[in-house]
Image (cartoon, rainbow, N blue to C red; front, side):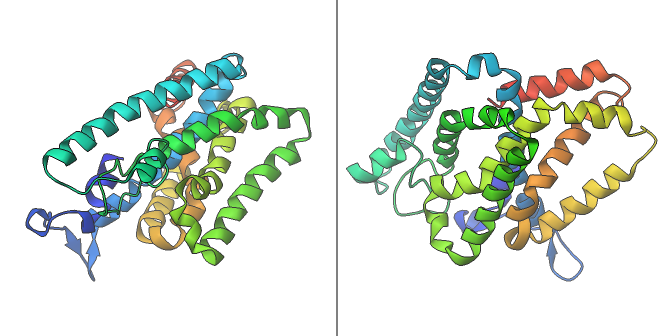
Length: 273
């Protein structure tokens, strides 16, 4: 996430502070590729949020608990936003009007590429996260039906994001709506992986000697980085779970310590909710 914010938005950096890029071959900018790859962190966070919500469903089925999480998240964000506005007023930067400010308070209209007024440009996830907390019961409700219904929801949201990005490009300016289409299937995928213990089943069936997963992960990561603008948003649903699985698998001594694998995954998913 840090790499993405540092190197993924070169247009936001003053020319006098531009980092000298590492370029190889025929103009391949390694620094920019690393910045692009960092975007996968959002999908990882979304997946882990769904995973953590499923693991702690006793808490998350409570409307009161979810509303409390929303209030805490918004309060933390408002403190950061207030600091941004305070510094902006001291430096005489353009401030948002009242209507825009009210929308910004819920993560709406916060654009990382906007120079029109002071805002926490990356706070759009706050709005998306609050929406997820409100609709996550849908994921558990689907458990009462056939598994095909659960897969259908993921596919529908995923397909809608592809169609919307291609034929309704303006939707990207409506951050909460666009991100619901883009990241909801990833949150639900995390929820399903936790519910059916898919990672545990894969870890027990895939021999530790097989290294294809690392090769596959490397290839997908390179493709995601190089063609991030064209297809990144379409394949992150598949790359994020692979990254998480490989990370936890490595920390559990190549799957030999199953308890540690589960502990690591539980810890990072809880931190993501």
